[in-house]
Length: 302
Image 1 (cartoon, rainbow, N blue to C red):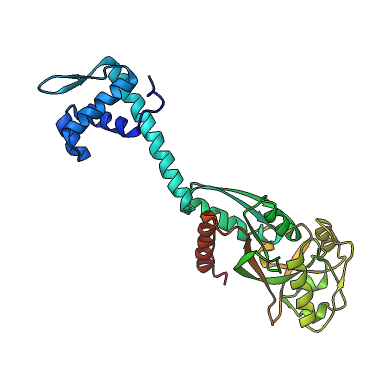
Image 2 (cartoon, helix red, strand yellow):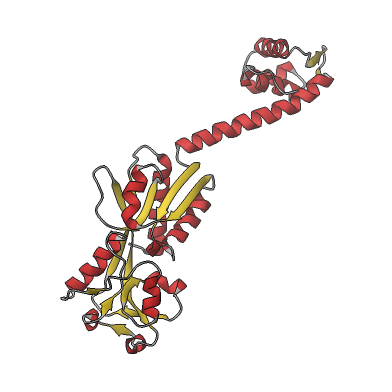
């Protein structure tokens, strides 16, 4: 016997207080209202439902059989209402709801998994829908409403976008395990000046491309880029000894077969990741950024 449509939650709460306390007086005290108001509200509820819910007598109040059924329904309705109100308020604070997150390949080995785990821990009511994309596609995907937030190597963005630095990660040299340089502890970047560099094209990964090329230029040489370097071909080429690459150090957690990593000699080269978004009135983004800042501080990602 669910409550009739249009019955106020206030009447249900008053009835439930009387039913649980078996007294109009004690219910009025609990609700901090006059006893007469409690009696009027219960009568209004009975009129709306069309059923006698309580049997009154001078000493106490008893539930009718219909009232016993109604109490159970009231508890479910009020619990659902409280949950709905709580989730709505949590959503307004950015602590519930959905966050659609785009991320690029460089972030998959450590940065994004760490961030997702912490968001789930701190805000369990936030459901993150994450998907890997190309860095070049980030602005369009966000503008078209496909994603709310992106994590990618730093680059320029159209007017209206906002960004915040999340992490700086060192770059290392990736090359074939059979390469003589793979046995070194450290390699100077200038020692690779004559080598072919495997790097995705700028129209796929602008932020990463600019860092790799800029790092080589800062070392005093223009890198020779493999024009056929796309997708997973890069890893195959490296394993076969076709070229070398600069990659983020966290790749060591899931190193492709046949590829070795060697530290760069000073000066170090760094890749900067940033969070990118366009919508300014979405609290869940702020909560995610707060979590990211906490993780960065704990992990020493600055």
